[in-house]
Length: 402
Image (cartoon, rainbow, N blue to C red; front, side, top):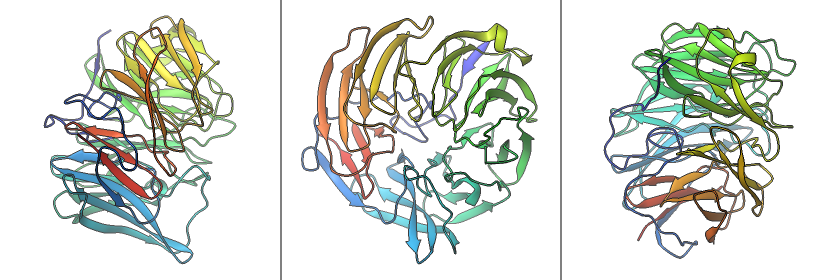
């Protein structure tokens, strides 16, 4: 069985076009970025952002794109913005949709948590069951809106779309009738909607899918409540699934070594390594290892060569052998975590929810390489582009560069 990890497109060097970077794997390449920063040190610029959004910034062709939700009475304005990457000045600010009454959300969530995707001059933004849109990257002109992916949210939206072969794959796991869907990137029309095949006791989750090439065909790997399922990208047909009891699944899976690494529960998280491929229920045949101690609930795991790095929401970071699950180290970092770890400057960056960042040396021995701190809440995953790091807080986006 042949496997291939996919990129969404041919990219200009230094672009960061989607959640967790060019390959959705949390790897930052290119010139080194500052290892030390604060709200005054190595700040190229900082720009206040109206409203609240936990979508990560994405950077393409000299612009920084992000979404936000701005309160308007009992309702809100769902917006997309572009900033000039050199100056931080707003290039355009576009309302996607106005909501008369804001739905309730979890206190760790926002109404603008999914991260945009930028591809070939288009910006794709997603607000969970409140809608999806395509905009022109140059001026923010809305090209289409899709409001067909309606489901009853529990705690709001969360998972980001992924783009491959002209389709946006989106996980829509609401409190009832959960499904996975694909939207045509050119037209905004729904290509397929596939109901979840597992009748989970608690149905809602917030995962971002991953895409892998298996036996020459792209498959959408979508964790959800009580299972992970793989879907044919063209037809939406379920190809195989792994059963593991759990709900409110958040992280995006990591891919490598013919394996998918993902967690399957929020309250009692467990991390699994599963062989890719197969047909039907592969629970008994494909699980390679599983681990409860230190497993993440919200941050996505990070694969660097043979090591898998992850951090639990309450701040316990780990490094294990990706192929075997053998633990190299487990250490407590300060605070709670939502942002996913990033591999940058040859080191692992962990950012907690109150602005404390810890650089850790890669490898099987734990060693802290530095710490930095910012004011404000930091639940969004940082982005890297052309020797700069972009960090979003609850009020501000910072660009750090030499």
